[in-house]
Length: 284
Image (tube, rainbow, N blue to C red; front, side, top):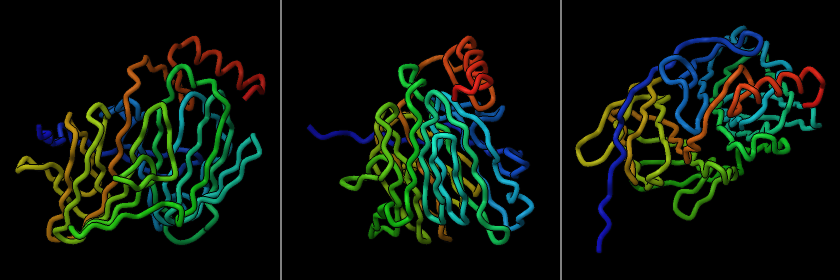
């Protein structure tokens, strides 16, 4: 019996809104705003990028987190991470960082440059209730440790998390089984890949424009647009007359209640109140 491929099509297009975070860092919030508050298990997706140091040089001074994970992917620039658990690491161009806040962490993310371009993404991934008070963890990933797959169809794909065929990315999270791909397409290049049918998924176009979908039902995403993907077990991307780049992210939904308060994401308001008490008592 042959398996019938069910193409993932774009069911919603979202364009982020400019905002600021940290000590005034300018960014565009695509998930986590009014238009798309979350896409279970993803709580936030920000794009940041500027040639003007005034937009980023103040960075993100010490701030707390509890109950979720952060994934930072640097396209250009350098950012220094420090936290109250003794971790320190330098995010460099092409590198990534996976931080599990768990029961609590206080960290800073500060630029190690005062000129040039700073560009990248930050993704927040929820944790299931059973893991929200787990010990904090931190992982820096050097650019050379992110494998790249090249296809004859004109695609170059960096595998940050999950797997593409036999190629596994350096970052794994068993609770949500995320897939995080950076896809670069030549002019008229194409890319196709299977996706777990039950995973929530999105594509964010960050250079050029591309078509998302298979079998004649493609939807065009312009630069800066996020396409939420519907159900299915495969997806396709195609660049038009110019090269294009996009991130493809998928993860297993948790299906649990979400209680949010700033940098805390728990399941109930009582747990949020406990997080505030623990922070004030120095228990992070």
